[in-house]
Amino acid sequence: QVQLVESGGGLVQAGDSLRLSCAASGPLFVRKTMGWFRQAPGKEREFVAAITRSLDDTYYADSVKGRFAISRDNAKNMVYLQMNSLKPEDTAAYSCAATAPFWGGSAYLAAEYNDWGQGTQVTVSS
Image (cartoon, rainbow, N blue to C red; front, side, top):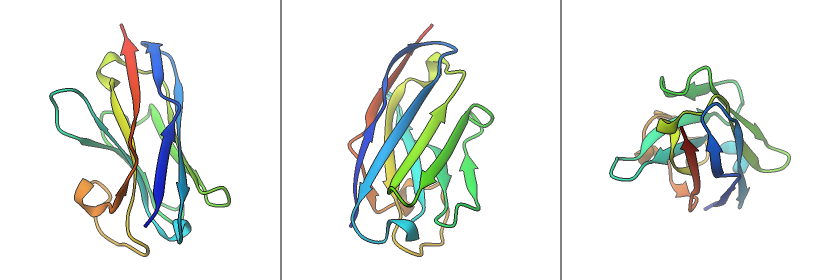
């Protein structure tokens, strides 16, 4: 099991940028696919981005493609989400998630992830 702690959220204006960080502790971090999900009040949790253990593949929701970028530093057990050109509809609690080691399912599905952080709030004002 891996412990995940997010940071970097805050209140920004539309058009601003934020970088979220996720610190992971526990074994086999480098063997896990890592994802970011978000949940706005009254809405279901939705996929934002994911990056595979090999760093070769990244996945994005259509709503953030071209604006957000996911990256990871396996030496530091860190995952990042760079968010640019933020919009009010990006307002949500953002959570980091990890799959099981050597997992090979769909990165878009929350059910594929075993471990979750507590989340960090991002609020974008218009």
